[in-house]
Image (cartoon, rainbow, N blue to C red):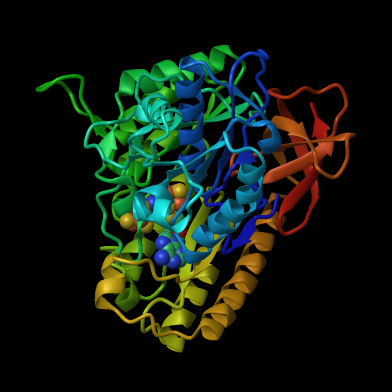
Length: 474
Ligand code: SAH
Ligand code: SF4
Ligand code: F3S
């Protein structure tokens, strides 16, 4: 698994680091219409596809892992950067040929690009039959009926309440060991570059009891790691009824950790303005909450952070990094997202991002060139004035320093024994397995008699910038 992702649309420790979209596996009764889903974008979108698969299974569809065999094709899309949308347009062009050969084929665009472009997508891409936003998935069966009756179907209403709380996701492409649990939807922050508040609507938290029930159910089925997902997990807030105790993210984290000491708990994303010491102390109290925090900085320069409306400055960010290191120790893994070439960013300001990477010494980085998104505050008020080649040069620069800091972090792990959760067979060799340590680093070791879902102690003997290699010890 590559640890440094340069301008991919697969964000934040996405299930697979290559750019291929995840697709539905086969479930075949031989009688029903077959659905094929391709998912793009962040973990939230992959998690949503599992809700879509559940709703579709309930209304009598099978799934297939091959687009060619499908009666319905859904693309669950991302709109975060221009190239994410470009990729979908190419894919739709390709599907056009399939639709010509099979006129009954239904093609649906779901997710953030559907929400952003709404009916425009029907006009632009004439072969699309359905456009469905992230809060409208319960309406899918109805929308399919509409298409069957010969109409085009659109539902892009954003909801203030929808959390799909009680829907049990159908796990797609699962390794049977690790799973995502959505704990909230939407985003109320207004980072000036970001399209998410417009594609996913207002922030809302999911019923804590349904989250715990989902974690328990996963554990009973053999899963050993859950990742709690939200755009800004630290603003999680839920109470069973008015006047009842409010459950914060720190509470929720503790409740999930108490499901079983053998269930590892991860979470993403932490916003630097909101992550509390209480969350850090909760992590410290529970060995099964992994020592790893995704804390996107976006920039190392305070003027740019202000223009980005991140509502913290460099000093505040470094203060949070120091709190993590003091409470959880310097071993705690930290990763970031960075945008280079934001409106008016000077060379000196860019260098402050480079310096920040050296100063924090990140374990991983997800690095992007700024891509202006229509109708965002930055698109309305600021000029996208950094030439593309400057953005690409700056991107290459931060990729280089990130690689150095990842390698330094990995070298720290060499010579130490790590507790690793076995996730599956290594891509390099059938004779080797891979898993991750507490800090989220990938570890590769010989298979022996080990099975997926087991915990093993591995002595790390060497490393590359992206992976740790080791031997199983007792
Ligand atoms: N909620 C998360 C991030 C969600 S989007 C957070 O607040 O950190 C994931 C990442 O995509 C962002 O962290 C940012 O680095 C990047 N991104 C978002 N909009 C972008 C844009 N217009 N151009 C380039 N990168 C962008
Ligand atoms: Fe976008 Fe900012 Fe919300 Fe993250 S916190 S999703 S970057 S608006
Ligand atoms: Fe995720 Fe992309 Fe939407 S990053 S929230 S799928 S715009």
